[in-house]
Image (cartoon, rainbow, N blue to C red; front, side):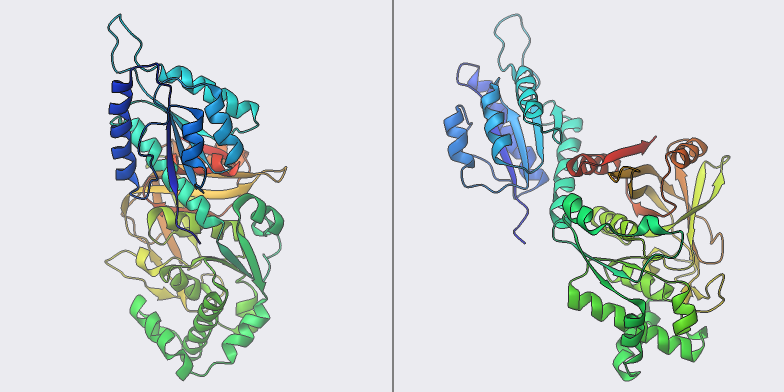
Length: 447
C-alpha cells in the first residue's frame, strides 16, 4: 500500500492583495505540516488554472485541502473535482483587515464558487472550514479530516474474516460482501467453525506452548481453569492466530455459541480477548460490522476497544453499562484486579474473561450499522468511562454519557440500532462524523 498522501492546493488570482495571501499561504503550510509532515505543498501560490494543473498533474492524493487564498472562480475546483475522487476539504480564509479600503482576499466568495461547482458535478462528500490557520476550529477540522482520510485509505486495504455464521436472530452482523467492498473498500474471507476446530485439534501441546505462556502473561487466575479446557484454549488461540497471519486479517468476527460449547467443549471468549490485545479487532456472535466498528476504534484510539451490549441504564448517574460474556481485551481490565479469568456466565465453562474495565476520562461509543434500505450509518455518543467494579459476570464498562443518557437510549432504540457497540478511548465524534460523510454514511450523533 502506498503511503498516505495529503495534498495542499492553494489557489487564487493575482489581482487581489498578494502580500496578505502569501502570509496566509506560509502560515497554512506551517499548520498542515504540523498536522501531518507528509503534506505535499507547492513551491508557490497557484494563481492560475494552468499553474494549478501543472502542480497536480502527477499527484495521487488521498486527501485534498483546497484553499481559496483569494477569490478563485469555479474553474479551479471543477478541474480538481473532475480529476480526483479522494476526499476534499474546502478551506476559505477570514479577511485579514477590514478598514473601509480595499478587499484584500475575498476568499469567502471563493467558497461559494467552489462548493457550487462541487454540487453541480454531483459531489456532496466534501467538507468545509472557514477561518485563519491559528484558529482552533480550523485546526480541529483539518486534524479530523486527516485522521478520517487515513482510516478510509486503510479500510481499502483491510481484510476481515468471519468464523462461522451469526446465530439465529443475529443476522444484523452478517456481512454483505459486495456492499462492504463498494462502501468501505474492505475484503472478506470466511472459514467455518468445524474447520477452525479441526485446526485447533491438530496441534500438540508443545506446538501451543507460546500461546499458553502468552495467555498466562495477560491474565490473572488462568490456572484455575480445568487442565483440558486450558489446553484446548491454547490450541484454539494458536488456530485463530495462525489463520490471521496466513490471511493478513485486520478484523475478525467469530461465531461463539453454541458451537464452541457443544462441539469443542471450550469457549472462544478468552481467545477473542487476547486477539484484541494482539492487535486484531475481534468481535463475537459473528458480527462483521461490530468487528469493523472495533477496527475503526482501534485505529482512532491506538488501543484495544471494548465490544458489548448496552444492558443497564442509570438516570441518576447518567450512565450506560456495556457488558458481554467475556471477550474484552485484557489490557482494558482494572489495574486492581487485572484480567481475571472465570467461566462463561450461562454455560459455566471457561476460560472466559470476568472483570470490570478501567476508567478513562474520554470515551466514544460507536457502531457501524445499516439502514433498512441497505445504506450505512454511524452511531456516535461520547462520554467517560467511570471507575466502577465488575457489574455482572463477564466483562463490563460503565460510561457516563455527555448527552442525557435516557434520551440517547430512547432515541437510538427508536432509530433501530443494532445491539452491539464498540467503546473506544478518547473523544472522536468529530473525526467519525467526517469519516461518515467520506463513506456516504449517515451520522447519528447523540448529544
